[in-house]
Amino acid sequence: MGAAWCNGSGKQSFESSLDELAALASTAGLSVIGRTRQRLSEPNPATFIGRGKVAEIKLSACNQGVGTVIFDDELTPAQQRNLENIFGEDIKVLDRTALILDIFAQHAHTREGQIQVELAQYEYRLPRLTRMWVHLARQAGGRSAGAQGGVGLRGPGETQLEVDRRQINKKISQLKKELEQVRQERRQHRARRRRSGFKVIALAGYTNAGKSSLLNAFCNAGVLVEDMLFATLDPTTRRVKLPHGRKMLVTDTVGFIKKLPHHLVASFRATFEGISEADVILHVADIAHAQVQSQISIVEQTLKDQGSCDKPTLLVWNKIDLLPEAVREGLLNDPSIIAVSSKTGLGIPGLLKRIEDLLNQELCLIEMELPYTHWELLHAVYELGTVSSIRHGDDKARVRAYVPDLLLPLVKPYQSLARVQ
Image 1: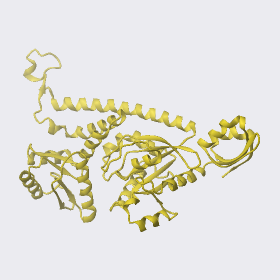
Image 2: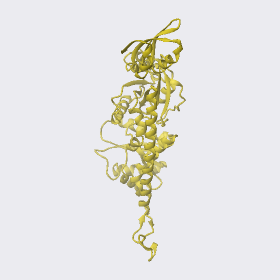
Image 3: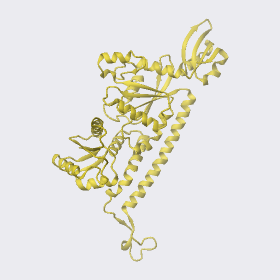
Image 4: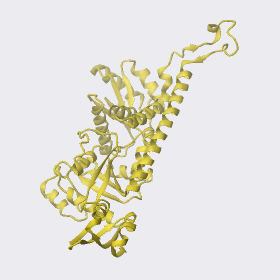
């Protein structure tokens, strides 16, 4: 059962948010049997919603045998504790953040992803420890230590709550050190990629917009694709060939979502750095979704918050196969719009051409006469640049191409023309 409060900002957006909450619950393995909402000027500081609504939810949950009530906003530790006291031990109270953390825990398969999720979970649970240890068991204090207990063993002792809080803080510190090591390794990987000359394209977008499907359409990457939120969590990077032979690296990143928990944003900083350091961002949007404009705004704001809004970005309208044929054809024929279907392959060649044109703007145009004895250099030009024409002679070929700066010293001995495009 889902519940939330509404400040009057619009029933449609509110219902859409609850629809998304229901999808999250289904992804987590729960069966949704009901939902409710309440219009309030601000949340109740004690129970988030009004007492009357709390009683209504409790009665409905008991009558229908509900085991979990999920709120569409983050509850404070006091609100969660109060609601659990009212609902009783048989009904678990979750908020949107806890639900998303649970989904991430299910879908994190790499060690890096597991560390990131574990850190976010500990930081979320730390202020909520009171509910977990209501008995406040004592350790080595007072009379339990005996009259001759010795220095440091007398007094009220340490509560179990304090022990657990100290252990969790220690675990958080350890996980942050491990993540810092991950960040350093990622920086080293990116530095090697820079030296290799390959440009990096990051796929960003709302969850379930089709980023993984698009990566598969580019290069048959074999990334898991399912119609659920956060089906893939761990980043995947693959090499993709552009129409004229140039190769690039494409990274599939974690999907964004409304009210993305700040614990996750902080923990997944190493992953988000992959977006901020990419050369080009492909913002993938589900054109068939009823709230696509809202989703686009959320992604753009998240990219801005992460310092990636100044990157060259191409908005890619995905899932056009779900649209009527006339609308689909109109989008494909509009040069100002990038529309694709990662499922059927429609528009993929045009998207790759747009990426190639964008990347070529940073290259230098050269013409050279290359002897066949140095053909390995042409292979490097094909991989890192774009060959626009080649004319073969008896012992050499005349090549016109766009190349990155790192290749200029190598082609200079054979070069007859060089200028910035």
